Image 1 (spheres, one colour):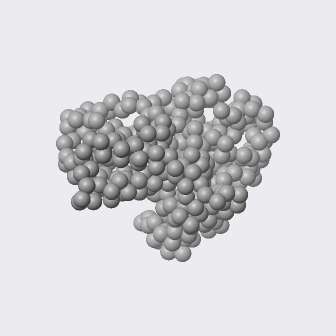
Image 2: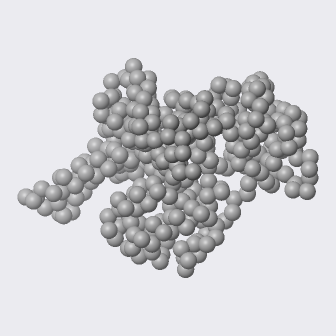
Image 3: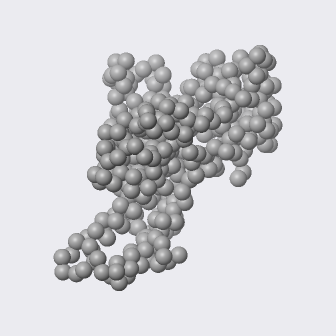
Length: 370
């Protein structure tokens, strides 16, 4: 089976997403500010990729000024005045719809690429870095990487790579292989698009053995001068990865997973809502909170198919009933009690598996009020 990316679907989806977002925001406003952009959509990565592009344009504007051959931009007084001017300018972001819409479209395409293929995305970022300034480039852009950032942030300030891009590219691939099991599910990341327009992975990835897209799973789917605005953009905290620099890296500080909730010797698995909540509170899902409303209405198509197949014995009606029952619960603890009582052992769930973890995280997101 050979999988290809459906660029037509991606292009159309990104265009429709951008239009819907702009229709909503500009129905009552003429322009958008930088702070508005940070909270524009429920998909944090889309918002920050828009800011990232504005940062690049801000830098280009500075370069144009410095390229003028008739003035000494190296003079300390000129440098300080120019820095102050550019920092003040950065806090006066004012974008009208015609200019914002294409930025959203590009950000959506980039976010989807990052969610589904982080290695290729981050390798393309390394390719864009000026020769000999890879670390500087990564430091400047680290704050804009909100998804799968652990694939690349371990490289920042690490010795042993020198200025050879090849080593950086290889290190990214090697790191991904070590930590991929602990990364956020692409389904969960892409679910953040859902409040605007659901993204269909089955339409995005085409099985070339079924050129019409009719695979078994997709037949029925559809401080003003001292700093700049960009310096103050919130940086998400990430856990440091232990690196064996003699071999790029070979080990990491393994995160606990939901397997800790279950004793492997106990056939009667029971979910502990307190442990689950403690685990999920430490994860980087801040940008996703508030996305989930009614579970019975909010699942993406690919999630619905996965849960039906992996958790509910292929019975879509059983899944629908479970979602409605969870929606009727008043809090997370009650929801977990219901799941324990009706589904965990009745359906022989292995609670350490990805489908179960993803299902539980969706429940947490629904009831999380932080």
